[in-house]
View (cartoon, protein in one colour):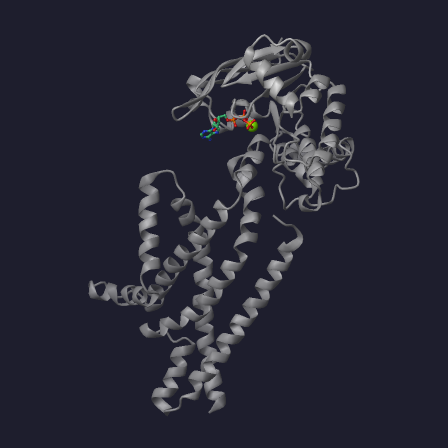
Amino acid sequence: MFITVTLSLLEGLLTTFKIFALTLLMALPLGLIISFGSMSKIKVIKWPIKLLIWIIRGTPLMLQLIIFGFGPGLLGLYGMDTFVAVMIAFVINYACYFSEIFRGGIESIPKGQYEAGQVLGLTKTQVFFKIVLLQVVKRIVPPMSNEFLTLVKDTSLANSIMIYEITWNAKRFMNSEHILWPLFYSGVFYLAFCGILTIIFGYIERKLDYYKG
Amino acid sequence: MKILEVKNLAKNFGKIQVLKGIDFSMEKGEVVAIIGSSGSGKTTLLRCINFLEDADKGQILVEGNCIYEGENAKKLTPAEIRKNQLNFGLVFQSFNLFPQYTAFENVTLAPKLLAKERPDYKQNKKQILEEIDSNAKALLERVGLSDRMNNYPCQLSGGQQQRVSIARALALNPKVLFFDEPTSALDPELTGEILHVIRDLVKKQTTMVIVTHEIEFARNVADRIIFMADGVVLEDGTPEEVLDNPKNDKTKHFLSKLSEN
Ligand SMILES: Nc1ncnc2c1ncn2[C@@H]1O[C@H](COP(=O)(O)OP(=O)(O)OP(=O)(O)O)[C@@H](O)[C@H]1O
Ligand SMILES: [Mg+2]
């Protein structure tokens, strides 16, 4: 039984990891774009983006998953894969949170850094990528590591719309075999996943520790 | 031919008129010191000339060519502004070094990025980069930092950081180098090393504009002193003319207050 449960949870872990990795892959660049939008001087870009961030951060991710998971069906748009729906909800949700972290990081860089780059004849793009970006990365590593850990655990919400990740598989044993321990056991998988992330983030922080400021 | 001419430059921040028509010019190799009380517009003038602010009116000419015209400011493309900007170098009061780069990398960063735009970059890449490196080494040596090249800004004293920032500005061979109170963010015992570097630049015939509160230093190094008050140039002459025989009452008042301290 233990082996059956372990194998099943490992299978769930694969789905969990897939949601985790795909969300990061898409939400990080999208978050950067959204953060530029939220800092834009153009009002018709800035305010809709602010509104979106407010709505996404102001409602439960669970509710967003349900809306994206069941919403299309209610509107008569059958055929959207549930997994795709889950991914859309996760990506938009996390992109909004990331965008606020990026914005905080970018706005914390002193104006003098941009001006020094400008008087040295660098283009805006060069100033951003060669001067500002690494400083932003250094500043946002701690809040980002928080978000990454939260994302690992948030993937479990996907079980509510029939995605067979770890928690779903653990609950399945509760229903079919009337045993509770697989659910407790599933915590070990989350702990291990988060443990690895913590180690990676610790490494990145040490790598960026070579300078101050 | 004047290397720099500023004609009737005016700048408002909202309703406040900070520059009210500044006129001055300088020859190649000349050193001009700008003095004046706090809020008189010295920093704003330097920022307008260095394209960090758009002046509302007036012109800036380099070697007779107009590179900025307040009325047409919005028509310049970013590429044109960049090209014009490279006529000048600016040393900030607060250094603004890039913290993630060593002293050496701070000096080479911009020349290396600019070199990529040279048509012969691909063919002569190795040689071009070596030249930039050896030039940066020579500059850091000149400002007395040959042993601190591989240190990060956070490992350097304020005076050393300011010297790196001077080397960084010199690396692009500006036609005119501007200093905005280069010593006022430093402890008094560190100002000497910066003034020493500037004296050395004077000897090398570097064309410079120095905003400073160090009057005696200005007297020593400057060919001309400009006194600014409330956004206008009140005096423009040799150190003796401006400091010893000022024409304007405001200048007299400013100088007497300084000598009280
Ligand atoms: N970005 C800005 N927005 C609004 N007002 C500004 C701005 N920058 C400068 N000013 C105002 O312009 C005036 C001149 O400022 P500036 O910094 O040029 O003076 P300064 O001569 O350099 O003074 P200091 O000797 O203290 O450095 C001041 O009244 C200042 O408050
Ligand atoms: Mg100033």
